Image (cartoon, rainbow, N blue to C red; front, side, top):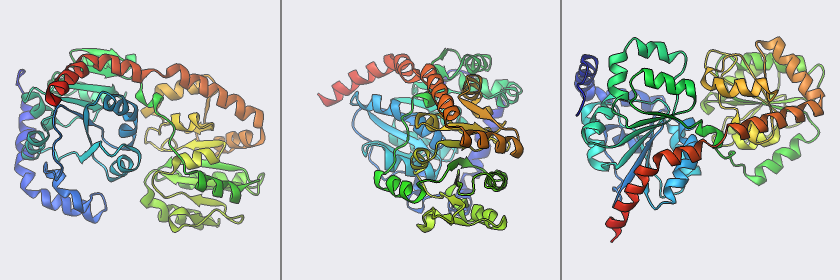
Length: 434
């Protein structure tokens, strides 16, 4: 390992090594919470039932669903070069997305817990030829161990939020020792790039946000037609990827809007589907009729609020509704990605807390491609206006589409930056196949 390891990381490594024998307790707790796959627990300890493929392996790591989906186009391009891909993530939902939306030859593994013995097992088994870390999910032992094995590492779609940056500045030696082990950082924006440089990344290139180039989520045509059939003639609003504390506000907005639009249907898609029953309780407490998709119920004429508490169907509901409220923005979460909704032709409304996608929302808001609502009253006013005015909706949708088109191109720039690594791996693949 080239650079010295600061005392903070040495202490971290010692502590994680010491607690590794207690991993079973942690795993047991997560199993009870439904956060682990009991058939794949070994992966959390660096063990795998899958065989490493012959030749070079490109390892791509993303924290959860958003990061995994952001890498979809990149994975397709790398796969087309006849290179094998190992994709790791940390959540059950991301594993389900990979299983349902990615080619079967993409190897998915849960990222091991960041203890030295687990990390060593993982790297010894998979022996990655190139490591691509998406955004900012940086595990110290994993990075240090990969660097010690001389695995080339690249941070792609790099993001450093305004909130995280000052925290890392106070731990500059620690973050510098991690970022300094990356060959290059491909940042989402100029500001992100400046922050990564200031924190110790040796080489930074601004390539843009891969999430701008993600294809819209799919939808089953038969299911979409059934939904259109039972909602035909009704105004529909979708509240996408909502978080605790938002549903109460959305239900109140529905109550007020229903005085003007008595047949209004509000579809709430909770960010975490297991919260469906909880959200339904909020709706029932407000005296509104509710149906849950997880119970295979349909939004009938009497249904005021429909809870879409299933996995992988957001594309279905984006296609159903002309207006989408993007969740995680009326509470202090940082907002959710609006790009998919825009690409599927919805007018977008959001709350004030959008730090996770601040550049995107700023561009959309400035061009009239999205609208901010600071509270319930503002939300009701904006939604009422969009529901009442078809032309205004279309103008907003067209403006948003132009913004997304202008901000695209990150995938091509990312592939161009990775080209030296990928060419070398293709040469190695050719030798392995010979």
